[in-house]
Image (cartoon, rainbow, N blue to C red; front, side):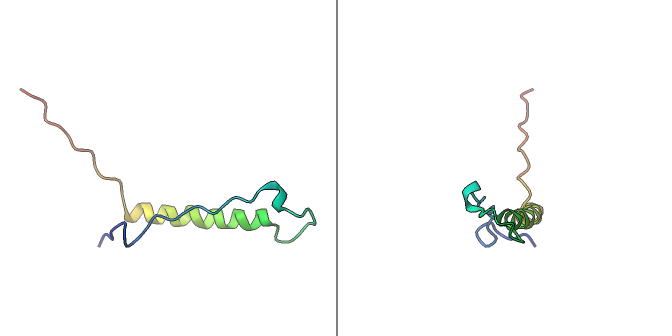
Length: 65
């Protein structure tokens, strides 16, 4: 059963960290690694959401005869 967009909002992408957010200390995981993981989860969630909410089919206009 399709769900409404109000009940199932589109996922939002993670906020990309700025270059200066990295401390350059070789952290494991680095803030950019965490961002990449969040970005992959977002992309997967967006694909799943798009499958639940396909775009509307275009309305075909009848040509005059």
